[in-house]
Amino acid sequence: MSRDDKNGSRRRAAAYVRISTEHQQCSISNQMSAIREFAKRRGLEIVEENSDEDKTGLKP
Image 1 (tube, rainbow, N blue to C red):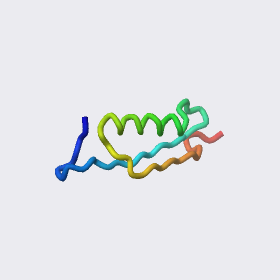
Image 2 (cartoon, one colour):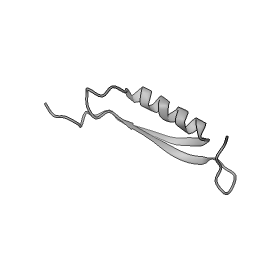
Image 3 (cartoon, rainbow, N blue to C red):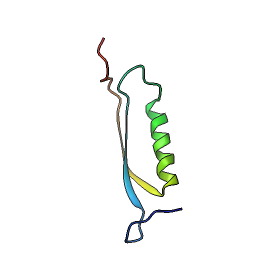
């Protein structure tokens, strides 16, 4: 099943993943894999991928 825009081309999307604390369970690569699979199932074309690996959630 492909979801196209009015011109018949695939809808474009950007993927953004991040790790906010060292206690977070899901890695950057696991998050990106899940987003890629989500986009594939919905007929989206990922045109840009961004990640933020800085630990920003909790300070010791």
